[in-house]
Image 1: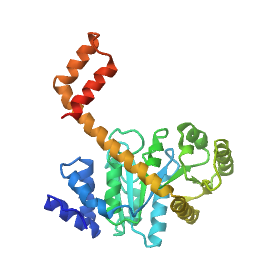
Image 2 (image 1 turned 45 degrees about the vertical axis):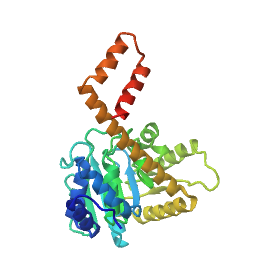
Image 3 (image 1 turned 90 degrees about the vertical axis):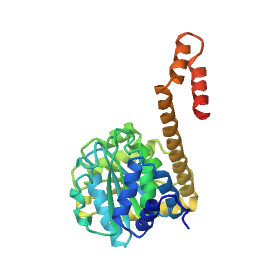
Image 4 (image 1 turned 120 degrees about the vertical axis):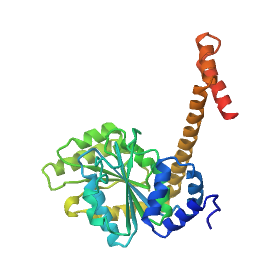
Length: 324
């Protein structure tokens, strides 16, 4: 049973979203992106309905085929009669066309499918490959009844590892002839992947990319018996080749997560990160209020005068913020 909310609008939006109404889902995600005053009520109403969706993150350098792979995975999951949500983070604007779903070009196959919900989100300058509001948008899709949520990052290279903290399973995509394995190692992406996919495997150099990737993974491998060993798969996503193998690997990883207890642990970390982000945002807003007043200026002046060190000044500022 949902907790009561103080707003009839929120109660109706949540009820209709639970029924699969796409407009209501869109409105709830807009509340998230706009940091609406109704957001707290909406999140409280959604909480009892969450925790069921499988969350898959897709990351990799630009040009490896994340968009095409996401499209192919949606088709494969729909073939299993799963409801699918897609969050694609655009680096500039949700309508600029800079990401997979900004203009929906590669998702026309699913545009009229009532079992697929597609949302582009603006990163709004947020580093990490994800919008700051992505975790809450994920909660909306989960509570709205999506069986699977695919989260595609903006493709900004070294800052994409953030997706690993959001997803149950992280899929790292590479392609031959692009130096991706080396770039992925530099970016730290090889440390966060659960499944590695060499897409465009019909191109020259695919075998070399697989070998290079396998070698790099072995260099940093410190796994105990029973630990998950990430597979390296080949796909030609534009033709659907290898997608069934990716789904099988996703299923196997899900089973391992459940049996090993890692699913709960990952979701606990996800919740902790989300809570921390909300708390830090609230503190920054309060500090911003202080900046427009006198408290921050006063402690800054005391530091300049040599009366306080910066750490003591920060303690005073935190105390003034938390007492409010």
